[in-house]
Image (cartoon, rainbow, N blue to C red):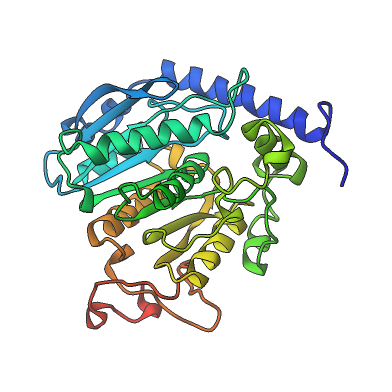
Length: 349
């Protein structure tokens, strides 16, 4: 296999994406605060904090809503390991919305894989942030048994990797994992027929071409020899013993194949897992504040967190194809506590 060189199409595209993400961040900083656009979120209390980390201070922000707070989530934003911050909508708006639904949230930032920073620095910092909330109930006011870990895209990758480290080191385990349009593989697995068809109409800038995906991942780990690392890319390792996991993919997203394949690994390992896709969405859609599909996803996430393993309040709909017409990809071995009698037929959902 030929290596992707510095001037490859993947490397060029990677540099373009880094610049685009920075442009988006500048535009967001100049925009009206989201709380003014969505005044109902203004009732959420936010507090910035600094966590001592192994590589320096780690920025975090807590979100406490006016009701609830019995369940907590440590949330990690995405950004291809090179971008993102606590103010991006995927971090700030998502956290506000979940807090308004009664979920106490600690949103975490981390160093980026730029300027010589590579794995495991990002993982170390997410681990430190998780431990800060898990070991000190005062951070969110939520006990460990009700504290979950999750993230979007690269943040989902980092969250899964931290869960593997906690399992191996005997650390405080999350109540569950919440992983949204995640990436777990160094090389994307082949997509199933439905997932492959869903991306055919996407413009090139929304696609994760193999050389671009490789460029992102090599930049993250710093050396192609580390692409088999099981923490950097959790699909490389054994997944037995991970907590119950909710995977929510975007429908038209090349990374959907990674989420679905990893869900299969979890299922085969006996881990309780639920995997769905949000219809009519593309990668990164949680970074679009107020998008109806994103709001629906936040309802799904809040329901999962409050029920621990039961997204949407119902047991999984099952069929020979593993899906139904509302876009839900369902798991096997989901230990959902919701009573089956309460669920309407799948065709009515």
